[in-house]
Length: 99
Image (cartoon, rainbow, N blue to C red; front, side):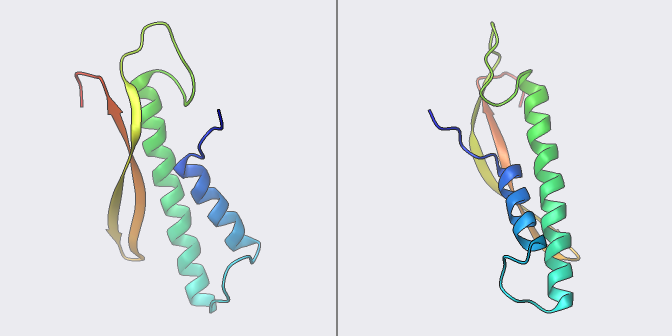
């Protein structure tokens, strides 16, 4: 089974592409704004994924004896900032009594 790419890794790939000049030509100000936005989105995404890992007590594609819930995809989320709207994927957990 092929593993899906985590949203935080997708953000990291977009950031690497930007730093290596593999994006459309932008002015210096637009480039800096995109860099700040992507970097912030990546940090937020990693924090959300870490919170999910801690809540479940296991990483992606790991199994443990007694499971107390499971990953169930992502919902789109936004956060308005001075740099514009940040878009993240909110991890979903099912099969737990706690939200």
